[in-house]
Image 1 (cartoon, rainbow, N blue to C red):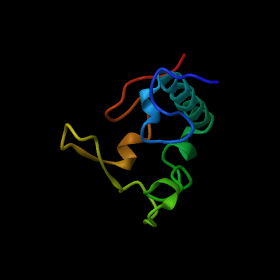
Image 2 (image 1 turned 45 degrees about the horizontal axis):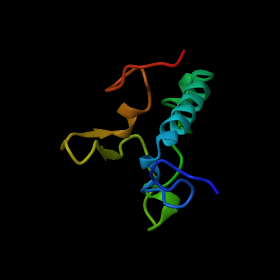
Image 3 (image 1 turned 90 degrees about the vertical axis):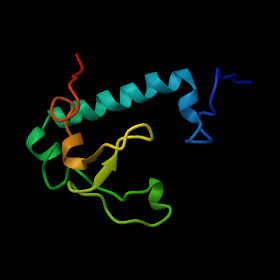
Length: 100
């Protein structure tokens, strides 16, 4: 029987972040994305194919495709709104980090 410290990994995507191992897992996904972008930054950060998909998880409910001008609210605590283009790079825009 598997036991978890918190959250519900694998079943409820809205509760999964309560599991401490989630942060290690998601950090690796973020690092893998960063490596992929670094291999071809012109096309994979700001190119035509850098964004692909809809605005909702698994397109449920059906929604429009995301693009560089899609506005993103940065959370429930702040009313700051940024466009997707400003969030594509980890070393530009509001972010300032890179993986070693």
